Image (cartoon, rainbow, N blue to C red):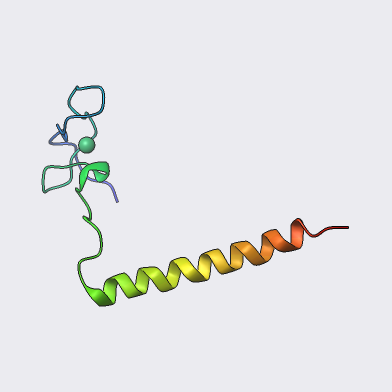
Length: 70
Ligand SMILES: [Zn+2]
């Protein structure tokens, strides 16, 4: 995922200055919607939800194991 830096993002940041991160072809950097603006379809959201649930289920299982009372 490399590309020549032709353009800066330019979105206004919390400091009030323009974002200086390199922009993707649509003119925004990866923090400002350059690559993805999130899931747009119900299926896409379902996929993300399923993935997140699986991740947190694993995380909880591991954590419960680690933090188990002696
Ligand atoms: Zn930006």
